Image 1 (cartoon, rainbow, N blue to C red):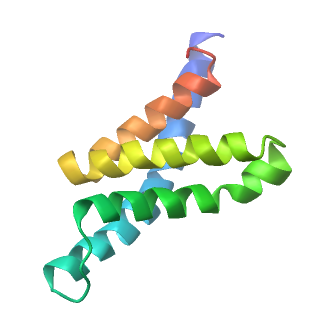
Image 2 (image 1 turned 180 degrees about the vertical axis):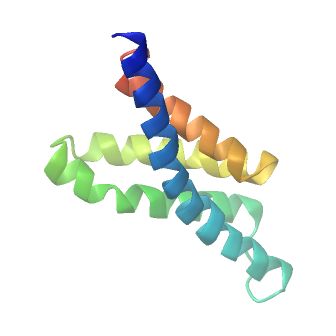
Length: 113
C-alpha cells in the first residue's frame, strides 16, 4: 500500500476511534468512576472495565451481524478490544486508550497485523 494511503488510513483510524473512546471510555466509564467516587454506586475498577467492554461489544452487534456478516467473531473481538482499552483508560487515561484503539484498528485494516 502506498505511503500516502497509509497516512490517510492512520488519520481516519485515529479520528474515528477517538469518537468511540470518548463515548465508551470517556463518558460511560468516566460516569461509572465518578459515581463510585461520590459513593452513588459501588463500581470497582474491574467492574468498570468489564461493563465498558460489554457495552462496547454490544454496540458493535449491528456491524457484526449485518455489515461484516461475521457475527459472534466480531462481538468477541470487540469485547476483547474493549477490555484492553478500558484497562488502559484506567491505568493511563483516555489518550492512551484512544491511541491503542486507533493504532490497533490501523494495523488490522492496513493488513500489517
